[in-house]
Structure formats: C-alpha cells, structure tokens
Image (cartoon, rainbow, N blue to C red; front, top):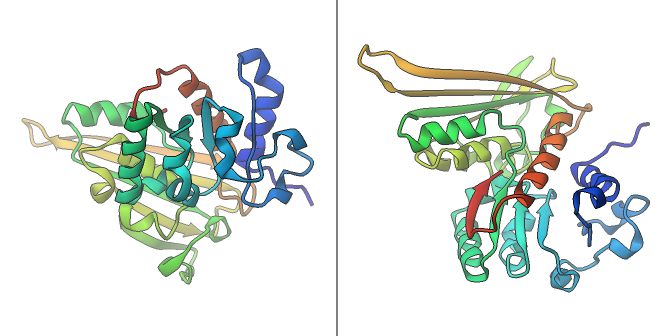
Length: 273
C-alpha cells in the first residue's frame, strides 16, 4: 500500500530540498503524534513540546495540523514569530480570532492565512472592498471517505449518490467539519463585509468522486441599472488520493502561500496569502 503524503510532510520535504537556495531554513517540526516524524524529519529538527517554540527562534511558524492548534497555541506562537495559518476554520471562533488579533498587535507579528483551495481570492477581496459583493456561496463535494466530521455532523450519512450534509453559514459548519471547511473559511476572510455569518457553505457527499475534490464558488453583486446582477461561478476539480482530506493542488498552494508570506511585510493583523 502506498504511504499517503500529508501537507506537513510535503512542506518539510520542500524546505529541506529547496529551502536553502531560497534563503529559507527549517528550524523545527512539531507533530501531535511524534511517531509520524520518524523517517521524514531529522531528529535534530523534531520539537517535542510546542511550548518550547521560542527556543528555536523562528521567523515564521506554519500550521498545517488542525484548527485546535490555533485555538490553543496560536496567540502564544505570535509572541515569537509570524504565523501562517493553514486551518482558517479556526477563525470561525470569534474568541480565537480576537486572541490572534490582540497577540499580533502586542508582539508586532503578522497572522497570514493560506488560501488553500479557494480560487479567485484576490478577485473576491477586491469586489468586496469596492462594495460590489452581495452574496458568496462555496460548495465542497467529495466522496464520504474524504470527510473528517465531528460533533453533530459525525453521524451524518449519505442517503443516495449525492447528499447535502450541510448548507448554511460557514460559521456554523467549521466546528463540525474543521478539516473540510477551510476553503469556505478562507472565502469568509476574503469577504469581510459578509464574513463567517453571511458566506454560505455547502458540504456534499458524492459517491462518484472517489479521487477528486470539487469546489464551486458562486458570487453575485447588487442589481445594476437594468436589474441584472454581476455574477461569477468557478468550478475547481482537485485530484486527491482516495480518502484524503487535502487534494494534490492544495498542497502546492500551501507551498506558494509559504513563499508568498515570506515576501510580505510583517504587519500586525490577519492577511490572506
């Protein structure tokens, strides 16, 4: 059986092989399960206790683990370094978002948020800033094996070839699908006029999508002089290993986000990259 590569493993590999020529140095890797670092992370780079992050003197800490890490340790990490959040669903919790903002300002470090699988991030942000965004809807569909659902959605089952498991505000979905709602969370951050309460997320279990994640983004503006509204619909098909939470193109997007935020100024606040 082929061993599945997780986003963190991919980033570690990229940093070890490509980092030096780009002026990047990997100073530590931490994993909730230390055993998973064996064979892919040199022992000298393995950090056993995340609370000791300051001892490694990082400039940037990249999270691609679980939103729980941001809830519990995000503000503390900002004391020592800029933070790249790979699980933006964590920011659906208002207390977590406020803690990150306060720590960012206090320690003069930036919170960068990876856009992940969200296509057209800049266009959404520009339209929103210009007051031209009235609605935004993000639908994520994949095989049921690709979901890691919790709480009230953990018992959700497909009732046919294609089943809508959730449809409603993104804020209501993130706590129950923390690893399957990051694209929707990124959309909510890209469109602050709508935010987590007015951006609509739809989670669909589709038995035909055994090796693909499909993301549809639909947005519209207010009616114009003719009564017609500006509208955009993008359809993204991302190849993925069966049962994987993250598609292959999204792993590449994480790497591009990492490179991008390294070139941005360290400004307090939350910034998509």
